[in-house]
Amino acid sequence: MEKTREITLRKNGVSIGGEKKLLCAGPCAVESLNQIKEIAAFLKVTETPLLRGGSFKLRTSPQSFQGLGEEALKFLKEVGEEFNLLTVTEVATPEQIKLAYEYVDVLQIGARSSQNPYLLKEAGRQRKPVLLKRGMMMTIEELLWASEYITREGNPNVILCERGIRTFEPSTRNTLDLSAVVILKEKTNLPIMVDPSHAVGHAHYVSKLAKAALVSGADGLMIEIHPTPHTALSDGRQALDFKTYEKLVHELRAETISFTI
Ligand code: PEP
Ligand code: MN
Image 1 (cartoon, rainbow, N blue to C red):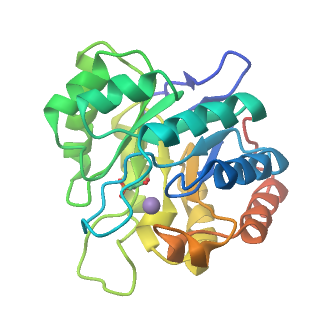
Image 2 (cartoon, protein in one colour):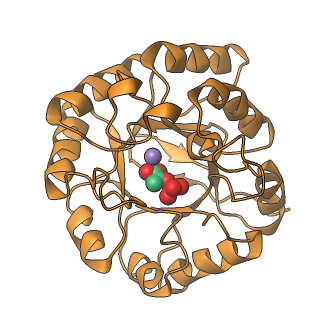
């Protein structure tokens, strides 16, 4: 088994792939400055160093909320600076990579884009860490090939993310493949995060799967949270409310899991 490559996200110590686990949380989409500020303030309370928030949303239906675009990027930068948080947002085109580069710390390539070699190569030509999600129909080997498109272009800082794959099981949104975490730990030295929110699709099941992910060896968690999940403009059903997320973090720390802050 290869030693995991530790990726430093900020000079003052936040990293992934080392001794300590990384927590990332935030809304599916940035909805307003107020919303993202409220969430950022809450992340400080829970010592969660990485704020997620979608700016360009890749929705299945054109009738759904598509994200605030550059305005969302500006909000992420503002709250990142105000609250001393790292930020991550999804990019889906080379133009979005160039734009988001100016505003966020980590660029996310989502499940719908992770088999686009042109996007992956572009992500490899810039210097920010890339959070690469597994496509919903991607094998473990295909995920590794996707990561190689990025690393071959000269950016070694790729974080893999298991977020569930499509199976015949209808009671969850996707099926969280924790065997992928175990296998990837043997096949690559890239750090691996798990996103239980998009995997299971129901807030009720997220905490248990988050714990299982860490036990399986994941280096970090990405969790969707929202102050009022029932009013969220996207993915409200799977978003944890503040109380539930705080409880989860508390329980994880009580299990003596050590987190980077
Ligand atoms: C997300 O994290 O906002 C997202 C859309 O996830 P995925 O690409 O895994 O569906
Ligand atoms: Mn989402």
